[in-house]
Amino acid sequence: MFAIRNWRLKALVLVLAALLAGGIYSGCNRSSLGEGDSDSATMGQEAETAAGPDGALPAVTMPADPFSGLDTLNSTSFYPLAVSIDNASRARPQTGLSQARLVYELPVEGGITRFLAFFPEPQLAEVGPIRSVRPYFLDLAAECGAVLVHCGGSPEALARLNAGEVEHIDEIANEKLFYRRKDRSAPHNLYGRFDLLLDKVVERFAPVEPDDVRLPWVIAEEGAAEEA
Image (cartoon, rainbow, N blue to C red; front, side):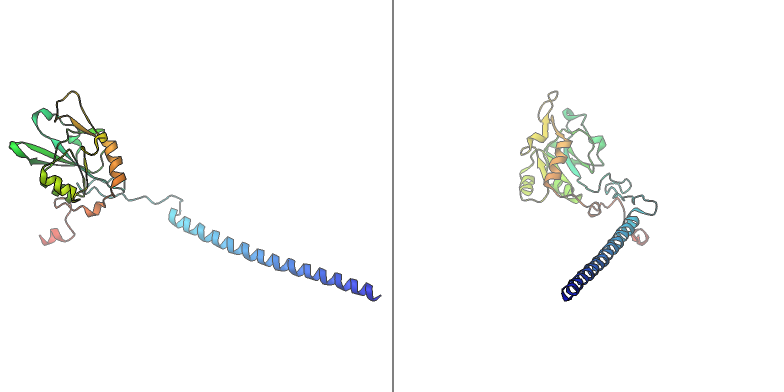
C-alpha cells in the first residue's frame, strides 16, 4: 500500500511539474511574441513615416547647378571638368564647346587664345582639340573645384600641378583616355573620350559639394542685394 501511494505521489509530482513547465513556456512564448509584434509595429510606423501616408517615397531634392544657379544637377555626385580647348584656326570647329556651361577665352603666347571650358555634368562623347595649360588655367579650375583636363603645360603650370595644387588629368600620363583624329594634323587633333575621363575622375577623386562652388555672378547671399 505504501509503495502504491508512493508511486501515485511521484506521478502527481511529475504531472504538476509538466504543467508548470508548460505554463512557464507558454508565458515566455507569449511575451516573446508580444515583443516581436511591438517591434514589427514600430518598424511599420517608421517605414510609413519614411514613405509617407500614401506609400510613396519622398522625392530626392537634387542640388542646383552652381554654374548657372538655375538648373538642377542630375546626380548628387558632382564631378565638374575644366578642359583646355584649342582655338587656333586649324582647330575649328571644336567639339563639345557649345555644350559647356562656362567658357573662358584666355590668352597664350603669340597673340593666340585658348578656351577653358567647364562641364558640370558631361553628357557628350568627346571633347577637343585639347591643348596645354598655363598657370592661370589652374586658378580658374580651382575656383570651381573642377578637375583640369589638358595635354602638358608651361613649366610653371606643370610645377604647380606636380605639387598637387589642382586635381588634373594629363594626356601625357593617361593616353588611353584620349585619341588623335586622323582628319586633322597635330597638335590640333587630340580629343578626350568623356566616358573614360569620367570613369577616371570618379576612380581617383572625391566628388565636389555643389554648395562649395561659389561663383560671384550666380547667386548673391541673402541680404546682399538689399545692402547693395
